[in-house]
Length: 76
Image 1 (tube, rainbow, N blue to C red):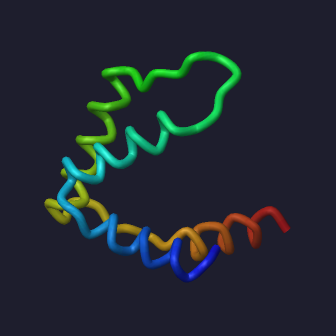
Image 2 (tube, rainbow, N blue to C red):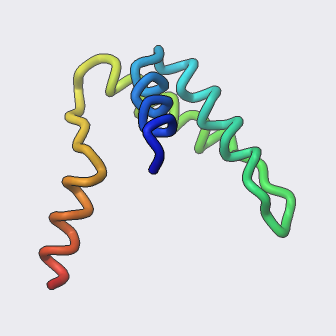
């Protein structure tokens, strides 16, 4: 991943939850699918709920690199 992408992700993750949810929705909508794809209202609600949990300090964020390293080490 480029430094620009890493910086962008860092900045986006520090936005308020509603802005992050909006960006997530737009990114998902931008993906090229063979069929028409719409983010369901349930998923929109789930994204907003998870962002709020992060904003409220109710969950601990774990860097993807750490999660992947642990998963790969357990898979052997």
